[in-house]
Length: 103
Image 1 (spheres, rainbow, N blue to C red):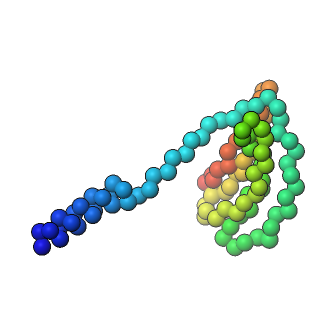
Image 2: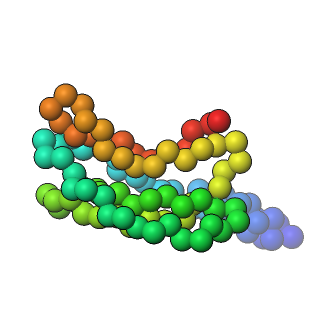
Image 3: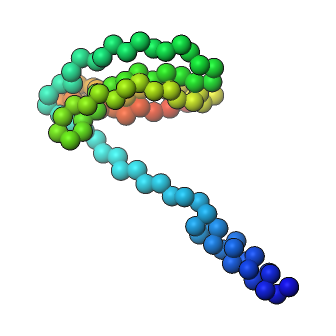
């Protein structure tokens, strides 16, 4: 019985330390002098219940603009999705990351 309790306690400690995966996200601002190319015209797919369509956008990767295609996002009740877009700030272009905002 003691062994079983000890094994159970070890299991709980192990799950407490290792049971929840950790995710790291490296995020940084991108400001460029060259404006992004014109957006591709992607036809929006047929609406799906419980999801919203986020249009594609130009990202800056590996020293050049790269098109990121549109994708589905699961709806979040009480929130609105503001997609990625480029903003002209002074003489530079800044990528504003997509985000959910409370309505």
